[in-house]
Length: 251
Image (cartoon, rainbow, N blue to C red):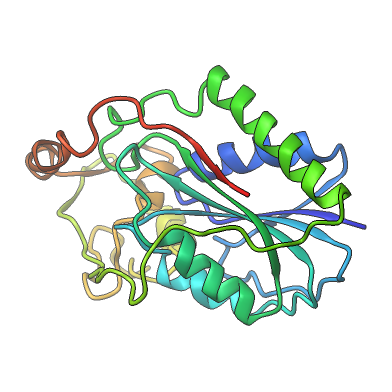
């Protein structure tokens, strides 16, 4: 039996949650980073256990993430599905992830929704996952392991709706200042090739879905989104992202 930590994490929040879960599951974990552009699916075994973690983008699974999951041949491998959200809601993320994972042969036995910092407005979910989250997520893993050890592979009740909510990816107004060294790291690592290497200060708005990875990996901190846009987004989300949202286990 192998334990796989399979994650898609543009700004690191989903990976933090995924690592907590994976480390609680096993001391010997194989990591698969679905964000890498050259990441193609693996052929798994029935007795493997996979923690499959994705961010909720507008209440959906990122489109290119879906396509990468579809390249797996799961062969009945056990899956724990994880939707990580920025203190608003997961909406249809888990049900979409379940449909995709099931279509390639994953046997889903549990689902988790977990809070991390919002990728655009960092004040929402600030500092999460924190120590309390870590303890709670470790308890979730214990309950899941108990279920598996009891030979119970039943599918849990999964939140969400079909058809999924509409989500239209959009590129936010990006500012690149003169400290940009033209190293092209942002262009190389963009998951949808939205940043042209010949001019990294521009973005193809038809491809960009504001994952924020280019901002996070910029070596000069030269890339950022317009404060006006961020402030407007914060105002729009402040009621829906208010308070301390809970982590949830579906088992």
